[in-house]
Amino acid sequence: MTDHDAPRPIRFVLNGEERAVAGLKPTTTILDYLRRAERLTGTKEGCAEGDCGACTVLIAEPDGDGGLSRRAVNACIQFLPSLNGRAIETVEHIGRDGAHPIQTAMVEKHASQCGFCTPGFVMQLYAGWLTGAISDRQSVKDLIAGNLCRCTGYGPIVDAGLELGSVSLPDTVKEDAALAARLTEMEGGDVFAYEADGHRWFAPTDVDELADTYAAHPEAVLVAGATDVGLWVTKQHRELPTIIDVSHVRDLQVIEEAAGRVFIGAGVTHRRAFDILTGMHADLGEMLRRFAGCQIRNAGTVGGNIANGSPIGDLPPCLIALDSRLHLRHGETARAIDLEDFFIAYGRQDRAKGEFVAAVEVPRLEPNQRFFAHKISKRFDSDISAVMAAFRLTFDGDMIAEARLAFGGMAETPKRAAKAEAALVGQPLDEAAVEAAVVALAEDFTPLTDMRASAAYRLKMARNLLRRFWLEQQGGVRTRIETVAADDALEEVA
Image 1: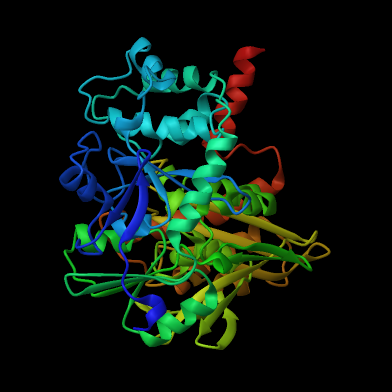
Image 2: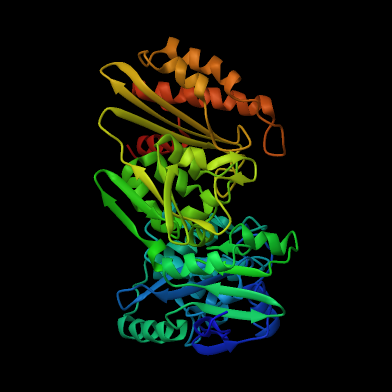
């Protein structure tokens, strides 16, 4: 450990007051700190895995332009040192100067029953109001998809959210600028190092610092949003002696476009990636809308979703179908590989010790290409995929010149369907070619049966998704629930 990364206390702002915390293990969750050390018990623990939203808090950090960026996150899986140089608000801070509009709306709409989930809903709606995410009824539903109410009081809660959305935001530009400057000073500007109970935490601020720190500590666990690693602690009770937090690395937050290709830094959250990916194809936006809950999308990153190598990750099949390239860094050495080659086997990726994912490079669709992505899960919102499918076909006239069919949930890694692709190449996109590819899928995959789906169901869904893609290309065929619902709503108005 060098002089510049000597251990320091965790400095942050809690409900408007500065804190400097030392002596707590780095894997202490924000939730445990709030409830046990600060006695702020309004923030609840429901699931301890980022599913129920009862622990929702608001995080603010400098946006790089002199203001603040705000987001709601699950305190139950976020680690305390990640707050360094950031501000946090809990439900106790709401209404400190009199009843807040969200409190008034919740009361007037009778939107609280047993009350256990209420603080989480309040904080999530409050965050949505501050960030301008509330526009109509569907936007409120999307906003609270990561919050569970066991009393089934969603109707009044949505009504309260709509009521809040009609309230004008206060002018906080000066206050935000002052807090942003305060937080920047707290962060420190170089590698933040923290140590307690024999465990270490490092938080670099640029990619070279990250490369040096990871090369010096190749045994470390990397975290960004901790949406996966957090569960290693809360559910598996694992000891993580050394952690490197990449969420402060500004170089990993970049989104750039050049020559028809989009470069997305590994630290870009799913929330920030939404606009650029939706602009590439509507199916990518719909997939991200159903990607976990809002709080998880606010914390989880594109690079993290790739690097953890999950066979049921929603994003990798889409990126593989689009022929994406992955950029990696080890010390001063950088390399790029095809994303599909990164996944070797279950739990194994083409990544050396001390090497990290730096960015993913995604080609935009050409005029002669057609794309499709769809997720099958037990719940529509905030659920893990049983099958994730993504297809990109490239045409030469009426003939298929290239086919890229990628699936999640069908094998031990995200994987292309080589036999099915071969059945399509050189053929027109007609029923005969599609049915030949449907048959070939059984040669490409021998899926597993688990709690999410049986092997037979997975294969049937994969086949039906290929048929759905073909049907949608014919035009005039309504195959999606949201489309049918929207059309029905228009018919009712007419």
